Amino acid sequence: MLKTIDRLIQFIEFAGISARQFDISIGAANGYTLRMKKNHASIGSDVIENIIKTYPQLDVVWLLTGEGNMIKEDKADILEFDQLPKSKQEEIEYIIEQKIRERQEKELKVLLKEVTDEIERSKKKN
Image (cartoon, rainbow, N blue to C red; front, side, top):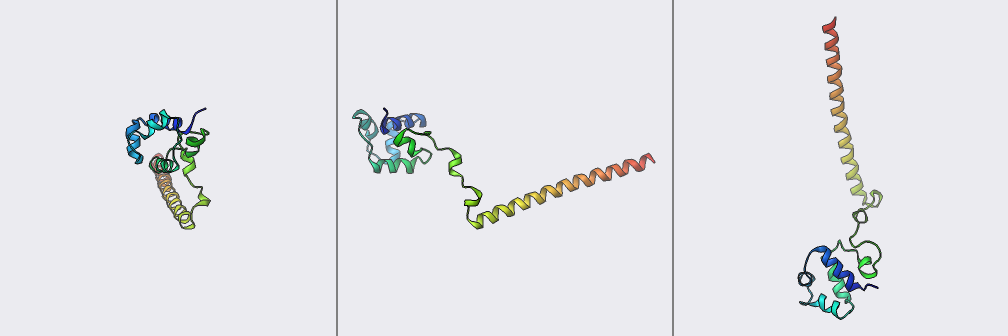
């Protein structure tokens, strides 16, 4: 059974960095990660906090339990529309209304041009 340190090594390899670079990035002592791996030791909660702060894309549930995906899915970070603050909902609705209005105006101009061209063609035929 893999331990948290084993999964952490997998993440470091996935990230394409050395254990030393990783240790530096999270503010751990030089050789911390490899020493923990060698000794089959547990990672301290303060180190886990630094890892999550430095690598927010790393799924903490996967790191601790091995369940789920190593990297968080983008969908998990996106709030549903009805979960947004009312001011943001109104801002989004306003932008959508503007975009709809712009498209309608463009479509109307195209339609008007087509009708005008058709009228001109019919005048030339008569």
